[in-house]
Length: 136
Image (tube, rainbow, N blue to C red; front, side, top):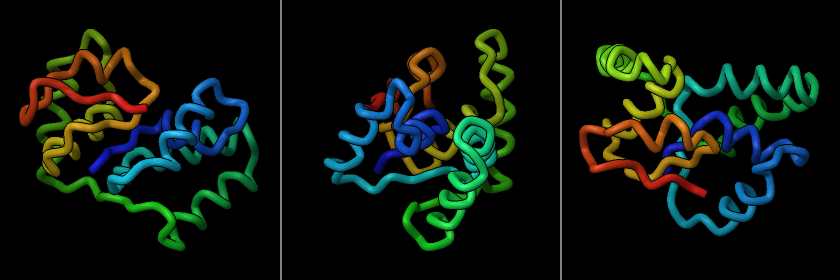
């Protein structure tokens, strides 16, 4: 199981993104289930709308509705952990969305994170592992 972060999902869609080729190549060959925390969706849709346009944003939302992506809700129980992570890594700073990706990964006991954000996810120490395996 792989937990996806905003940057990687955006890079998957935007052909002009510097990470696009790496992400799409990895995604095509991925054997593991790729899970999108629901918390990343506002960031992804915002980036799509502002950088590519409303058609791209709409297409992404439709693809989620059609089941092309597996999503995972943020549970009420995750919120305490998210707040703890934000406090612990305040100096990064680790914001809500990245902290929610960590919390979901911990709850699902996933070590693999699909991300373009090496700065944050390389530093964070998850509860269930020594560190994350950062993909692609």
